[in-house]
Image 1 (cartoon, rainbow, N blue to C red):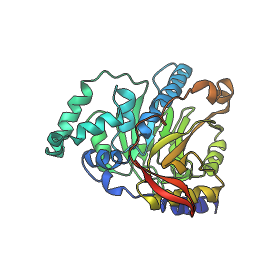
Image 2: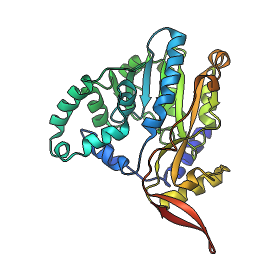
Image 3: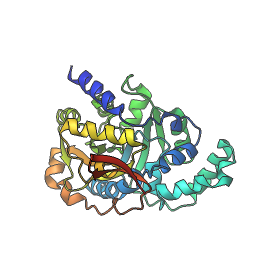
Image 4: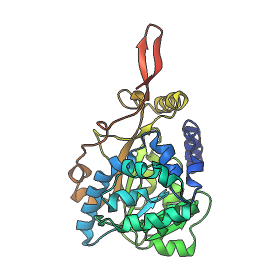
Length: 317
């Protein structure tokens, strides 16, 4: 009953968020960058320095490049910003050019394959992707961002034999926004297929409870640590309804949004789950140093303003 209750709770919370299914239905990422870029989507950029530090610690522990499974990989953007000296913001401007908007997806894929091949690979890991969007995964593989890709909805279906074989070598599982859309059911399927002492990097919006996932990981001998004193901006709220619904969800969980979501931005926590021996040897605070996010240029955002009538929602330029 607990698993069912969590999925129902996640579903309820998700009703307060904007829906972007259409941007994952294209053969290339132009719509993805256009729609999310307009909302100052930045989690790949602000997460990358932290991911790099954690992957460096994992590489040091195992003595080789770890294999990373990006859950909810979409068009392979996490792999792109990790492996190459690129940012989400820079890529957004590339695809926004009118010359890039005018070409076919087939031509764009060919150009992007050459584009990424022209950059030095400064990554600390090899990337595998998992997503429900076959088109997004196909693009990420075709342009060389992912070594392998798995198309599956593990909330509704079991992992195939071929996909399970791909996951055997995974050293690190990461997600920068899919928790809430997926639950411990997806992660259990993945962990059942792995054969390594896997680390799990999770950037989780503060409106989604993590307790059930942590309990699932604990049954597998993984200790979960949450980085304190730092949050990671995902994007602006799309509209006043999304803003107020998020604050209501946080209030229902007893989470104080003051100075964070109340300032008009989705915030995520960094959570790392590892074998107990690894966590004891090097605590999360010794692995990660944070200095990014809040100082980035931000477009208009919804904030609360104190007035005679009480708190009012305002659009701040």
